[in-house]
Amino acid sequence: MIRITLLSLEIIKTPGHMPDHIAVYDKKNKTAFVGDTPGIHWFTDLYVCNSNSPYWSEKDYLESIKKLKSLDLDFLCIAHFGVLT
Image (cartoon, rainbow, N blue to C red; front, side, top):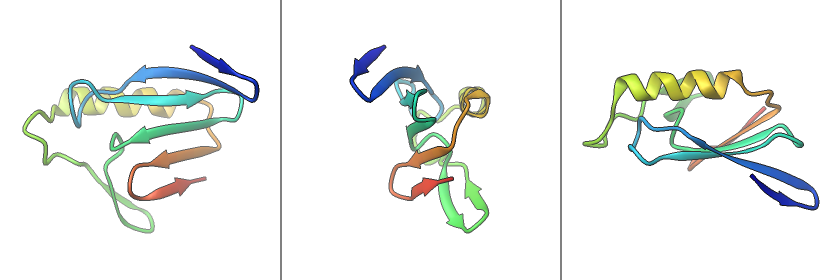
């Protein structure tokens, strides 16, 4: 846990895309910075699993998605594809 005046950041292990992938969760502001965990934003309502890594694991990917879904979020910040609300 990292505490900065306006932030309280928690590092969450989110393997799947890569074995050592992490997400950063700001519980106070209900925001998660998730990198490539959820996949590729293809269309407005479509995300495609990012399985192009040679280390990709379907089992780990699905477990990581479950972790993210369990968080109390208003904002999901995805690498390369912006912010979902």
